[in-house]
Amino acid sequence: VDSDDWIDAETCEVMYHALVTEHADIVQCSYVKEFGNHTNVVHVKDGNCVFAGQAVRDKVLLRLYGQLGEQLARPQEMDLPVAPWMQLFRKKMVDGIKFVDIKTVGSAEDLIFQVNAYVRCQKYVYLDRPFFHYRRSDMTTMTTTHTEDKYERWENLYDILEKTIETNGLDDRFRAALQNRVAVGLIGLGLNEIYSHRSRTADAKRLQEILTNPRYEAALHRLPFDYFPIHWRLFFRLCKKKKTRLLVELLHIMEFLRRKIR
Image 1 (cartoon, rainbow, N blue to C red):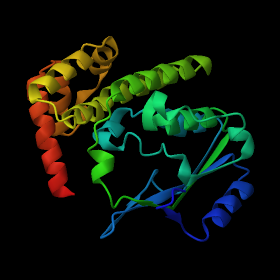
Image 2 (image 1 turned 45 degrees about the vertical axis):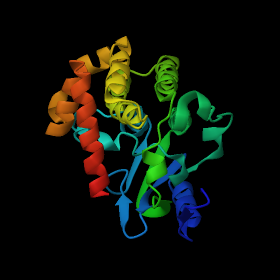
Image 3 (image 1 turned 90 degrees about the horizontal axis):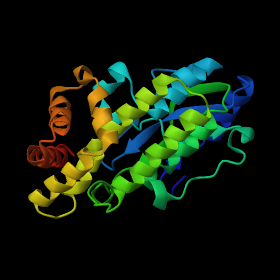
Image 4 (image 1 turned 45 degrees about the horizontal axis):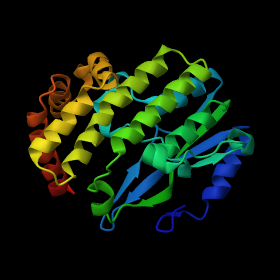
C-alpha cells in the first residue's frame, strides 16, 4: 500500500477468510478512486465470483493480456484488473516471482507479475467490496508527463508477454488479446507524444515512426473496430491509415476535453 493510499480495517480479515474457506490461491477485491472532492468505486468484475481450473485462465488470466469482443467498448479499462495491491496471494503463487525492473517495461511491471502468478492459480475468488482506497487527487503529474522511452519500454513488455504465451502453451485467444492491447496502447503512446512540448509537426513525425512498426500495423489490421465508440473508432482509423497530422490534432482535442471533464 503506497503511503498516500489506505485499506479498510477489515480488509485482511475478510480476504483471508475467503481464501481459507474457499481453498483459493488468490483473492481479489474492488477498490475506490479517491479524488478529494468525490470518489469512484471501481468494480473489476460484475459481482462476487469464484473461478477454478480452466475458468481461471479463461476469465482472469486472459483478461490480463488484453480485451476481447465487447470489452473493447471501453478501451480505457484495458488495465483495470492489473494492479496487485487489491489482492491476497497464497505464498506458493508468488514464490520465486520478481518484479521486472521498471526501467525496462515502465509501470507495466505489475502486469508481468500478475501473469506469472495467475499461470499457477487453480482457484480465484473475487469479492466485490471496495476495500482499497487509491488516492488520485494529484492527477497532473501522473497523466501529463512525457516519458522519453515509453515506446521502447512497451516494446520490451510486449516481447515478454509474447514469450509467456509460448512458454505456458496458451492458445490463440491470448495472442488476440495481446494484439488488442498493443493497438489500444497507441492511445497512451499518442498522448505521451503530445506531452513532449515539441511542435505538432515533430509529434506527427514521431507517430509516423511508431505506426510503421510491423507490430502495430498487424495489431491495427486485426483490431475489430465495430465495438468502439465513435471517437475511438475515428482514432484507430487514423492510426491505421497513418494520418498522423490529423491524429495529433485529435489527441490535443481529447486531452483538452479530458482536462475540462476532470
